Amino acid sequence: MHIDGRVNAEVDAGVGVVFGVVFFVTCILKDVEATQGNITRIRIDCAYDGTDFHGWARQPGLRTVQGEIESALSKVFHIRPLNGDVPVHLTVAGRTDAGVHAREQVCHADIPDEELERAIGHLPFDAITSLGHRLPFVVPADIVIRRVSAAPDGFDARFSALERTYTYRICDSAESDDPLIRRFVLRLTHPLNMQALTACAQLIPGLKDFGSFATPNPGGTTIREVHHAFWHRTPVQTDQFGQRTVGSGLLTFTIVADAFAHNMVRSLVKAQVAVGEGKKTVDWFADKLAHPRREGLTGPIDACGLCMEHIAYPPDDQLAARASAVRAKRSASEIDQNGSTRDSDHAS
Image (tube, rainbow, N blue to C red; front, side, top):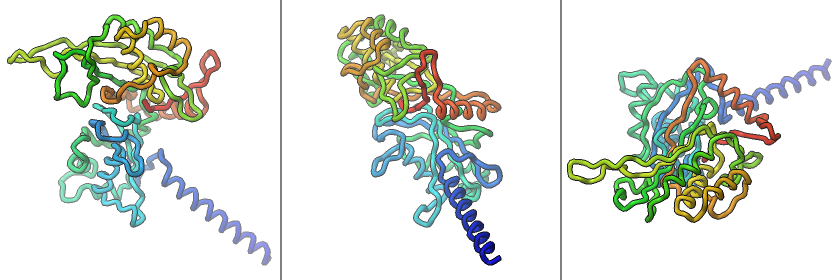
């Protein structure tokens, strides 16, 4: 009896430790599912000028978009990690690199209701509405908070997304050069051949290995499915003084896919620009798509012209199913008809 009692006590203690570890890990998991009653998942729609950021993702000692928004949320919620409070963690629809901009970015965070209520203060609103009023005044000027809302059931900023749209803007004429937008466009000294650019863009859509234009994440691939890709020149318009309006004459490359590999968009643009400048041919670009291999002219172009424009989500009643399907794809890697594996990394 004494031995059995000791064994039972040890088992009880072991079970207690296991449950303690499980609880701790659950609290710090990056994509922990919000539970009803004590945690609320909030959705934040934002935009930013990426010029002075080292990308989206938090990095020690560097200024990042994620770091600034998480810091602002901590201030609003009076969260003090040094006092044992759990820091706010954001999950984003698509990570952007250093110098890349976003006109539309979406992220979510799971906030304990007790902390969320602290956003009210003396405001005559509910907690989420109060947060939407306070947060825009706490983030730095190069970040804009467009909307704060309670996330629908099943919503995941990253895994629920259907597709992401990026643009790359180029100024290729002195007449269209404008200092007001110099941080958001690539300046070139000679006009590009629009016909050649269009011919290249028409080759991009579809399920392909973009290994000539992207770097795979560890254990990942560069196979992606692009839905749309095209070039467009903004019509030239003038104001009442005869000057070109902001953005007139700019070249814009637009690309839409469910996900992008690292440096994929900027590398595609650089290669197409080489064709548009007459340094390479459309046939060369087609060969790079058909036979993935990296070289100097298929590296990434300057970040300044790249901007995340839009993230599309399914209707609310399909959010959870979409997230589950994407998670399963990432876990088990989708196989195409040639036996190649695919994954869904969201960096670009």
